[in-house]
Length: 300
Image (cartoon, rainbow, N blue to C red; front, side, top):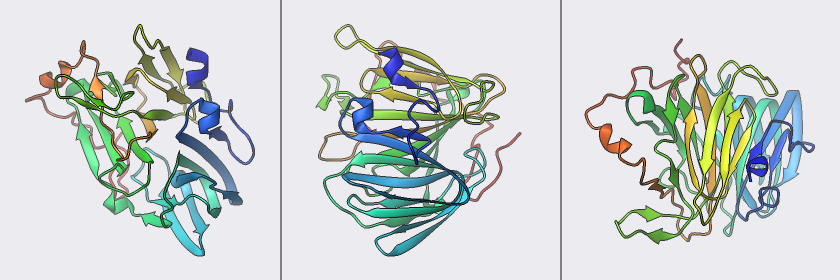
């Protein structure tokens, strides 16, 4: 399973996409991700088909045309520079993206057709999660309670160098309430990574991602990830995501599943869940937040 779960930059390129992970390519049903690299004045037109999508600037700005309207995205210079604005695209639409930069297009197979919409950077809730060396920043731009979609859920996580995030390890692979009252939702999940100081295809700046399963559903991934790499999580516990000293780590989480209500419900690995209780009384790491919606720079 390791080889299929870890997708290095370039492994899934197919014009016009620098990265393309469809549900079929992932071997599941709902979640997808594409990345566009546009030169100055670049333009791409495509159909969304059965999927609802977002256009999320990773670096650069763009104009997005859909259903006769234009959504102007101011974007950002990098994922480590600012929280960004974004565009929502409905299923069964023809879309043109024109601009310069690198853009992520998270997607999910959708039942309903919603209207294209603009998501402002100033409206993105920035959450500081964890404590100590498990401190991280979560940009909840498309969390269920923040932005309306049919099935799609997406958030950004920034982890200061030397810290762990996506910790304690957790899973969302069953729609059920556990005996101890913990709620879990069945979700497919994609991690897309960028490492501060790295560029797509660069071998120098690295982070690490762990995914592991159970005896009944085995999966075993410990991937050295670089800017542009992807890790697929069809099931199993995922975490930690590790930022080595000297390199902040960014990842975009894309989630979707069959549930009638959008949810990010999860359960911790019971062997490691105690770590959450240890955060009580501990401060969040002083380097956070790394970015703000106002466009403040990432601190040195």
